[in-house]
Image (cartoon, rainbow, N blue to C red; front, side):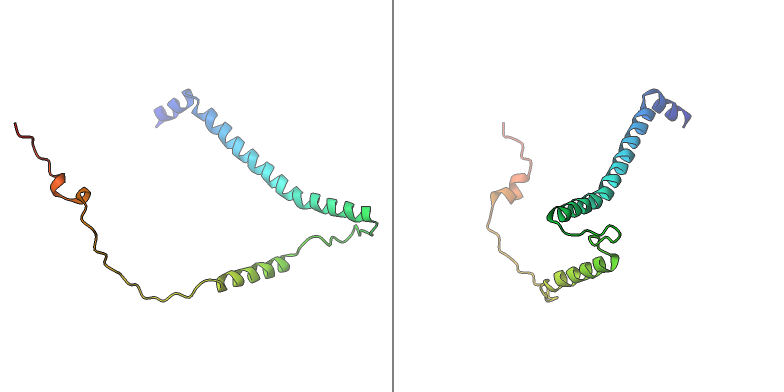
Length: 118
């Protein structure tokens, strides 16, 4: 076991592992920051457009966010809608036998290894 670990250390395996894991975790952290910042940027843009049109924008209440109960109701409605679109199928399985045409490609006589005549 020690020889395996020594070979990994000598060949640069630890370096590759550390660099690989650090790249993956840094990418995940960046994605978390980006995805958490997107709603804030959208809200800022909407507030800026409302101020530009001359409408009053309240700073204390945030009207642009959707609560968890609203999200749950929308997802339940979509789930019920898409489940109703499925066809009702009968539970009867039928097997129809099809007569196949003769094909020399599937013939066993051609697959026998014949030795050539001398």
